Length: 251
Image (tube, rainbow, N blue to C red; front, side, top):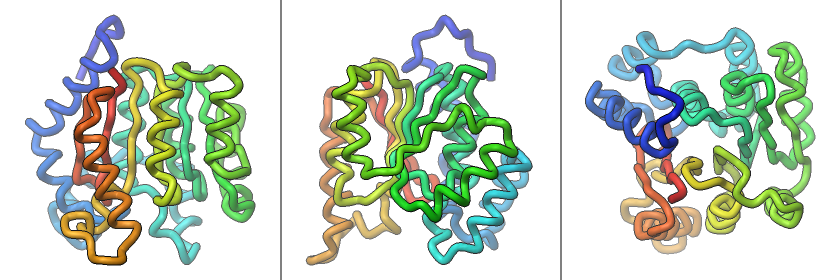
């Protein structure tokens, strides 16, 4: 797909999403369940075999992450590649990742950016930061990724107070669900017009369809999905890729 850089960013995103669904990727992505889905599913395997182009260092980091007991928190490879494509499509040079984990998606975004690109990665766990750094260095993007080791709420507050509102091109939300509403509102302040906010886990294994009484996380996501759907500050599309991914483009 060749799109001229002079086209408005939000229009380029709409074109990409339209092509994706015309080509059948939207339907195929249905089979990609939480963070990678059932690798034995033949349709998902077909999608991966015919679309995934994983950088060698990303593959190494994925294999290292799979050794961790919480490895299901890692973004699905096809989802990370899709977001990297969005990064390129809107010519993003500034991105925020809220919830880095071991850095698979942060690395994917950094690799997709030009030499002056910058990813601010929010991660509180030192163990995961220590896993990520050698891979960032091996891929040659350690200077593109700035890790903020403190609560993401504090990091976003600091960025807003520092006058960075409206200066970011892309934000990926994938941290503690209890703060998702705050992350969304803060991201709307930090992202520029035409910039993208990507929200992960919006389907929560299907539990958001009919949240059980007492299932706080499902209700939080259910409420946020309703809010974003009605939010006239953004244009949006909810995808069934991974565990559900909402793309919100700031108007």
